[in-house]
Image 1 (spheres, rainbow, N blue to C red):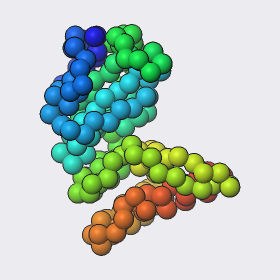
Image 2 (cartoon, rainbow, N blue to C red; image 1 turned 180 degrees about the vertical axis):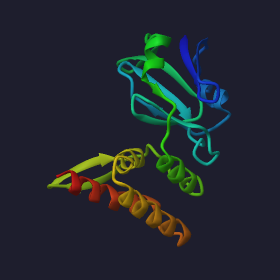
Image 3 (cartoon, helix red, strand yellow; image 1 turned 90 degrees about the vertical axis):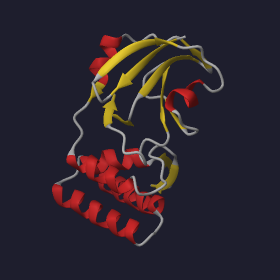
Length: 181
C-alpha cells in the first residue's frame, strides 16, 4: 500500500510502498506501542507510542501534536487503503514551529508514563466530554504567559511529588472548559 512518511528531523515527506501486515507499524517504529490518530479526513496517522519517553521531535499536522516520525495511511470506513492525500497538501498541513511552552511541557511529561492521546473524561455543564492531554496542551498553549507559568509550575510539582499526572490534566481540562464558558 502507498503510505506517506513524515520525518520531522529533515522536514521531509516521502511516499512509501509497504505491505501492510499485522506487524508492519511495530516493525517500522521498532516499538510495541503505536498511536493511531484520525486527524486527516479519510486517513490515519500512525506514530510511535514511545515517542514522548524518547523525546522525539514534536511538530503539528493539522493542529494535532505529533512526536517523531509518522506514517499516514488512507482509510475507507474501517478498511485501510492507499494514502490519497498528496505530499503537497500534507506539507501545507504540517507546522514544525513548536512553542517553548510545548517543549517545556513535553520535556516534563517525558519523565512520566502518560500517553498524549489516551482519552479521559471530564464533566462540563452536565455533559461528559472525552478529552486527552494533547487537547489540554493545545488550550494552555494559547493562554497568557502567567497561566502557562502556573500550568508548568503545577505540572512540575505533580511530577516531583509522584502524583497522578492524568488527574492533574483532568483538573486543568476542567479549568480550561470553565474559562471557555
